Image 1 (tube, rainbow, N blue to C red):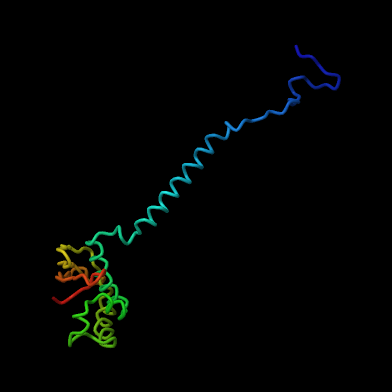
Image 2: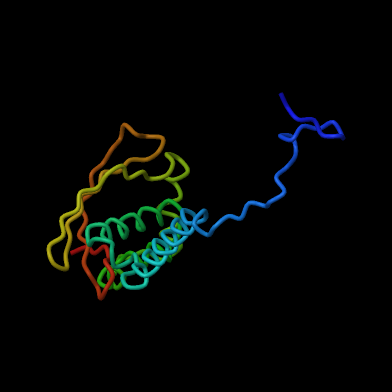
Length: 164
């Protein structure tokens, strides 16, 4: 049996008159999560400052990057990228192409058979030299795969494709 109030509402239907005060302990899980996120972000930022991503890349990967740049340059007819991927001896060699010769040499096969695709390459780094075996084909002639052996040398901090 419930006690009726004069206005017709039951005692249980009334809101509590005393407000509930929450303690800071109720927010403790959120504070801990926030602190952990700050620590993780600070750790990542500090690791990038101490050792930038360029320094975390292996020598094999750096060699693959320069070989990839050479083939990408041929696909995009980007002479500057092609030239940047070559060693000084190649650039100074008598038969090194000019920008016009480079474009003419690569434009025909590019239009006819598509871009060069390098599905894999094998890299063997020995000191400041690397031997690279590149497996390559054109987009439209996947059945005509070729293998090219390249020598890549280190000039300063950079790897460059070199004829010898």
